[in-house]
Image (cartoon, rainbow, N blue to C red):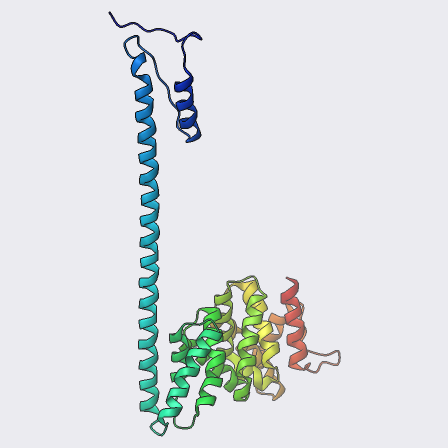
Length: 313
């Protein structure tokens, strides 16, 4: 018999075919077929083969998924193991350095420092190396375990929050303490102030911390001599950084010049030209350096007005 295409009518019993099609449709597989006269008897077998292939594909996908989960789990364990080994190595190196630096430290004190460093890393959600780097910065013969950890904590917090290295964070905090004549127990307050101000301005947090720190490192002593507090100056710097988008050293040098000239003018050490330049610069943004009687205002009042101008712009 020659091949010819026919159309299957309602007289054909298609119950088994329809059942197979329904099963495959539930598996999101679409079947299209043309029935030839010689092939109708084989259609049921073909559908069964398709069903078997679909089951094989499903089983293969499940196998692939299971294999991927196993690989991911192994990679996770591998990374965790490598991190643990790295942490132990960093910790041992740091303790060796401390032991060499502080020859009078007993074995029990060194062990206590090691355990408390691990606890600090866990409590502050910081990397072990961040803590050990900070601890070794403060290691010297004049320190104890508690004093090193107390000094290390604000450094670790600022480093973890800003992305600055432990060394940079320690330098920033210590620089602010020195330039504003603050005691060591004010270190946490310094770190908290820098972090808080940076979080309140429309500037990348890490960049804000770095800018404030750089500016104060450049001009803090001059500002302190002029009579402005660390808190007020840090707020002024953060506002200026947000508005100008320039580096901390640029901001610091600009304020250093302004503060220096105003301070020197009170002692009669500035030339008329220098005072005129500083006064003109401040007057251009609506800030006066003189009272109604012509005498110079207190520098803190002048800078408070400048800060208000920066906030309003």
